[in-house]
Image (cartoon, rainbow, N blue to C red; front, side):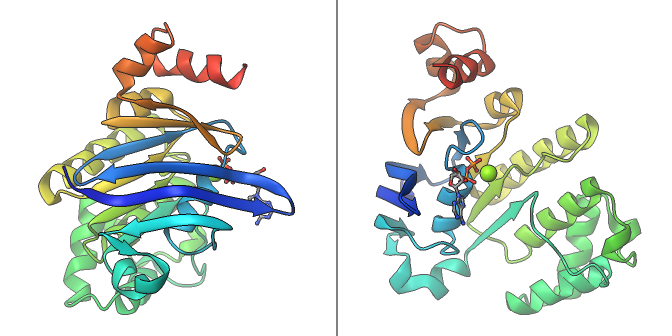
Length: 240
Ligand SMILES: Nc1ncnc2c1ncn2[C@@H]1O[C@H](COP(=O)(O)OP(=O)(O)O)[C@@H](O)[C@H]1O
Ligand SMILES: [Mg+2]
């Protein structure tokens, strides 16, 4: 399989604290890679460096075989992200917000693409609602629409289902898997829902205090840590 993201010795130091401490990993084409770790482990910082929103202290990031900093524009056109913590302009309607992003991404035929995505995520009915009146679950789905507007080859998802009720979270997972299968999108994904990680991820990386401490297919990790689920593995590692 092709390596679509290659990370080598990536490090981020904040005021002397090594938030991400020399991690190396690859994301393969068409793969869903789960990034698991306790709060403060360095997951969000890692994703932000992959999006060039945070500059690494040291290390190397290659996406599509290209060095990120030197090829930023070209790479970011083919990538997108979603997180529970994105803030959208609240006075704009859902459709207006997505139209702004569609322009930013140079989406051809934005209106049609936006309508299509709103229907996929079952929020077409709120397209004219001001963003300030949305529930957190609706905002999450608007953010996922945003993330797919430019037909990305790679999606970085930071706790995308964190604010969703179990029904919508389940639908979202099904949709993300369908989108992955149909469009061959590769995903790097974080979540605190270990069942979700087990279900979604082809492979998982466990990170703690900025370091990768385990890596493998969910089944293999569960066997390695003599647990019954990824939740067991997580708890054993977090409490070490
Ligand atoms: N902008 C920042 N300035 C200083 N410290 C930060 C900043 N962003 C993150 N950190 C610290 O880096 C560590 C990792 O944070 P983060 O990547 O958000 O972890 P996670 O997403 O795994 O919960 C934490 O100790 C956090 O306080
Ligand atoms: Mg985080």
